[in-house]
Structure formats: structure tokens, C-alpha cells
Length: 156
Length: 148
Image 1: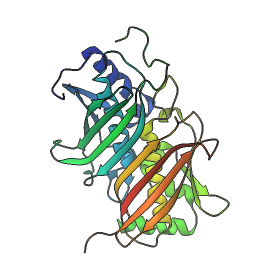
Image 2: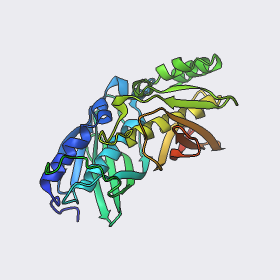
Image 3: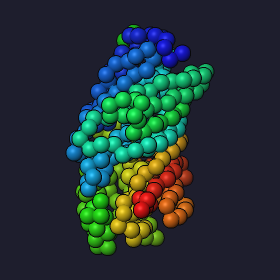
Image 4: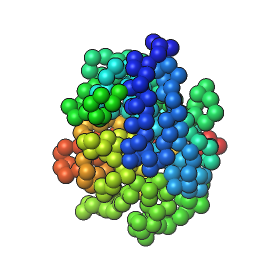
């Protein structure tokens, strides 16, 4: 399932660009780096105003939560042929080890089950390789959570 | 680490809430405020700001932002209620979103469910106009000590 091409390549690219354009993501400087199959990758550069512990310079856990939430949501859209509004139902982050101050954080996510009403996702955050993760996140999303479309008709 | 904790405990003893928030860069960026409620418990608030929005068509506060606000509240609540010079380290954080965050102030309050020698468990609740209608509930585990 994870090696499959996106259900709608254009929609995934549009959703990736759209989700990182949301004000909070812009505040964090979130970038959409693209996708391998149905797995998108996002990046947030280390910045001193994103630090949680001023003594160590380690990024705030909230940055991890935001990148996991956003990347996981984009991963759900990789399975959609048409964009629907989704809402995070729950999210759990395991902090595997401290992030290194000064280094950018990457997040790669996948939706491993798209059921009729719920999407299930998992994500890893890392500096250099997903095999050496700093955090792991699992989330569920409610599908079709709002009738208000996130995109103008025909945009993807 | 202990330099930050010394500063924190000094600020706490003088109840310099704004200076505590100012000491945490990301909390300052979000626009967090904190104070005490009528019973003396810490109460965190996040006045609405455009930069904290996720889905702009609704509009709703970004889910990750809500998570960051709650995680920050849990950490500061725990530090506030302990005497340790060691900053707690978050182990895991689990968050249930119950309602979308509207374009108004978000509040959070925490409860230390258990404080052991090595691990603490903290419950966090977030709401907007009506406390009986929570926007999110969360729980976190923190490591309290580094192995000697």
C-alpha cells in the first residue's frame, strides 16, 4: 500500500502546498518537500524563537506536534481522489530522544488505513534519517468533517 | 539546565507570570499568558491570533498549535508545583480533539495525576467560552530525573 502512487498526484501536491500555507504552519516556517509514493515529507528549520528549553536550545515539543499533525493530514490526502475536509481526532507523540539544537526537523508520514469515516496515520520525525527518529506520532482523522470545501471547485 | 530552573523557580516565587512565559521562546511566539485562578491553581490562556490558525476556511486554530499550547501548559504546571532543579523531560503526549478551536481565547488547566520518583503523569484540559465543552483533553508523561 505504501509503495502505491498517490491516488491523485495533483491533489496531493495541491494539498501539500495548501496545508503548509496555513497561518500557523507559515509561522513555524514549515516546508513541503514532496512525496515518495503516498508518503509526504515536511521540514521545519531550527529557529531560536521555536525553542522550548532556553538552557539547551532544544525545539519546543509543540513544533513536533504541529509538523506531525500537518504531515499526517497530507498523507491522508495521498489516498483521496477528491479533497475532503479532515479533522484530527486524536494524536499521540512519543519523544524518542531530544532533538539536536541548530538542526532542521523532518517529518515523513503515511496513512496506513483509510476507512470509510476514519483515517489512521503514523509519522516519524528525524534530523538525518527516518531510521534514526527523534519522535514517533500516530493519529486518527475524521473524514469529511466539514461540508465547507478547503479548495475552490476544480482546483485539484 | 539548572540555570533555567533556578531562574524559573525565582520567577515563580515572585509570581512573575509574564517573565516565565518570556523565558520560553516558543510560548512567547504562540502568545501564551498565564496566571492563577480564584483557587490559586495555574490557568493558561491563549488569546486568539491570526498566526495560530490552521484551516483558514472555517477558521479553526491549528491542531498542532493546540497540542503545543497544552504540552507547554503541562510542563510549566509541573515545574511550578515541584521544587526540583531538574527540568522534567516529556516522554509522550496524547491528545484528543473534541471540538474545533474557534477564533477566541483558548484556556488550559492541568492536574498532576501522579508524581512518582521518576515519572509524573499530567492531565490537561482546554476549553473556550464554556468549560463544560472542552476543545481538547490531553495527558502527558514526564521523566523527572536523569539516571545517576
